[in-house]
View 1: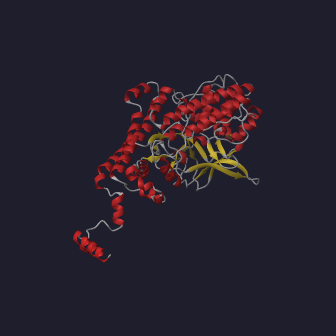
View 2: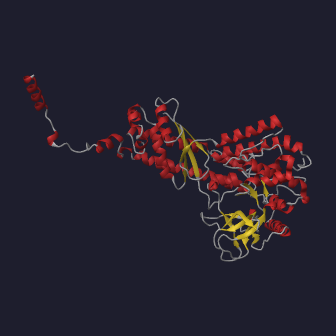
View 3: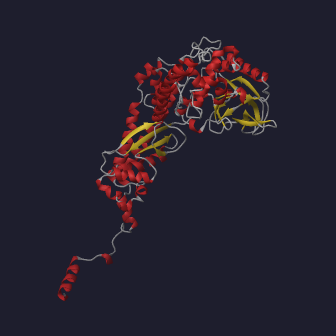
Length: 544
């Protein structure tokens, strides 16, 4: 059978059909550039790639006055609330009006949330924070100066998060002498939102085996470790007074990188990138159905000079005090796997499940060139990925069948690949071609799903992995894996229904005959008997 298949990670919304490109390959390529840059020029032009499908930073330890890595269990709600209130006082001491918001304990033990302290109309600024009190890539360059001079000046994928992480480490090294000390203490105490899978043990990552997020987590774990080693040999070694050796451990860097990835928000111009905004990090993601959010973090202009400030802004009317503020999930973080990999948790009520199945033309297919040309006309490559969301299984299965029919065309149906049909053949594939072709196309998709299901972790391995994992990590991993497996089973069920209906389907030849009005009883006037034909021939011979 002429096909190849596989599964890939799901990112960037609901595009069901696309040209296959490997985020993992991009990550490894970009990481390789960082390696070469560091080794060839003392980290000149260092950059790194943020894997779009995720990361999770864990807590480490430090001899600094500020302790890194206090876990959820060691930081009670009361402690977190006290630290958040310290941030409020710190902002007020720096001239920030915090009367529009309040911090309070969240319903979930071990976390706090930001709420509105007064009623507000839509688009009202509830909290306005000067950019000088935020941590951004620009603030890192300004604060660290020549210590990060070896990093690229121009923005590149992942570099802004690295700069933010470096400033976090520098401020961590200063301890209580840091300008941002209250904010840093609050960030280090939150072990929940900085527990990204890149900091899990390999045993814990095994809980994701079979899922595309398994490979993404391993790649990110490797990438962040490699980043740290390269920075340690270059940036840290060149500036020991800025980056204290005892403080800037691998665990501390993973924490800092995790904070930059999971808690920073993207701000528009003039920041044009991620930013850690004090108190805004307490705004939780929306719960339940999309649309429950009531706040956003953005930029506002203040004073006659219209100086840019970060702000927490209401997106809808807030009718009463003490209403918790919730922000929307970014479009790229709608799936359970993306939330786990990028944020370190899964919102059970807001996340959707998604898998991606990839099909391609085999180079051994005698009609590979023709099929590739047809796909190229549709702006598709020789491998095509389908994102299958839990609520779109039937629709995407139909799209997959269209491609699978083309890939499964053999000599019996090869006339459809002729140049005369080139402009129409893709549309032909949206409907059954022939019984043999339909069966082959269905089996292709079914085999791909079954092969993917077999790759997932089995119960025995899961028990071993769970012993090396916190209950929360295992819970999130099960949420991702179970959702993906359910989709694959739903696709198999949909394909089996297609197979059971093969005898009842109308195929290309029947459709063509019907279009030519030939699928009907023959009228008697259209019948020419053999004797009449013979007599007509004899008469012709008599005359000539």
